[in-house]
Amino acid sequence: MAYFDWMSQENNLSAAALTVRAQTISPNDQGRLTYDVFFPRQDVDSVKLSTITTLDFRPVGDRREWNTRGRAIPLRTPDLGTLEMVPVESYFKLGEREIQELEEQTLGNESVFRDIIRARIPARTDDLVTANYRRLDVDAYNAWALGQISARNPQLGTTQTVSFGFSATRYVTAGTAWNVVANAYTALVQTLTAAVDLIGPFEGVMLRLATLNEIIQDAPNVLSFNSAVPPTRTQVEDRISQEFGYPFRFIVNETTHDIFSGAGQSVVRTKVWPTGRVAVIPAGGVIGNTMQAPVARAFQIARGAPAAGIDVRGQTVFPEVEGNGRGLNVEAQINAMPLPIEGRVYVVNAGV
Amino acid sequence: MPIRVTKNLTGGQNYLSPFVGPTPLANTHAIPVLLSGMTAAEVDVNGVLKPGVPLLRSGALISAPAQVPWGVTIEALKVAASNSGADLAAAGTVEVAVATMGQLNRAIMEDNLGRVLTANEIAGFALAGNFLKLVA
Image (cartoon, rainbow over all chains, first blue to last red; front, side, top):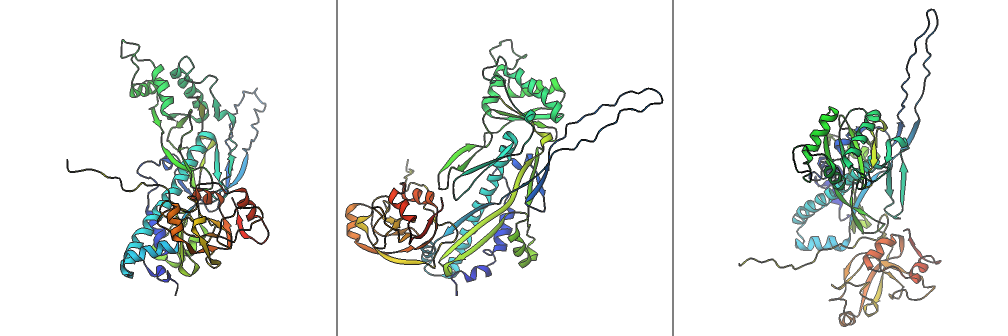
């Protein structure tokens, strides 16, 4: 009898139970993950996605003479494309010696051992699930700020970067960096003015703290007679709101994650929002969607436990016994990818 | 004050399995390893033989060209009191199970060892008669 044969019979350690637990974990990581605010979930039926780039064609009719025809409006079609996502997956392994140590701690009492492993494996599974959500967080902000997604092969350590092919008019670089330009506040106002034409009304910008500090330093402070006293952040937000007539807010993104730098264990603590990028947030706050496709293996789990209410497009967990019970491999997978809507994107590289 | 904090253990990263995909537990072989031939890269300060150490059939490390690795260690195992010369010599020879086939993540092996694989080790994995493949 395989060592872990009873695992599938334990309510808390079956694939279905671990999957249900995984799907109860909020993609929030104590507020550190915010991608789902700007990229709400959208269920799709396939890992192959069709994309449509924005068609910016605004024809104007003409006046005509009496008893003649007016202007024919031609049909223009947007660029169409397809892209295919690959899964996000994390795993951990337990070796035979580690399993032996677990049982020795309980003096061979299987029921106590079951309690310990029941506590440990689900808790460790939570780490896998959160790691997958952090990948979506990184991908969402890269897709928005840079118009691209980078994927590192976890076995080879090599990186592949794919561009969404958005128009270059939506990703501009400031001619002079905002820490050098005469007035960073004026540069921001010019950016917002240009953004209205491409994305319509806005409700704020996402940026790094260093960029915000440059803006605030240069913003006028009409409430102080001392010109050396900069305004507060709220005062600058109010001023921009009054200038444009929309509510406005700065969203500073200094969130960091530990991103693996190769095929090994080394990680680099990296800011998810690229340096110097100022992205205008359109009214409504939605930049795109996180496309979530079914995980084929989840169908089998759902069929085996129909009462569990498993979401086949959510995080799916697979425990796998190896070598007649000498090892245990637990994987968590999700088929998801953030996809910005081109018509909602306008980003400036402010250089600071 | 009667309260103080004593740091008893320094945290850090743990050893990872070097195998890509399932651990080849169906193809293991116990070989004798003379621990005095190991270094701090293969045996850590706690006397644990690390996973992913490439060994010859004799149990020795690969040290010359044209040496084919027989297997790699599978899991972290305590084999000596520490990695000091005296403790390794005192531990003598131990039987260690190695996996003789499979796919290996080189980056994880090097992270576990704390050193890069030598040119002889890398070349050894590419030699005929070896069923262990470095995929990274």
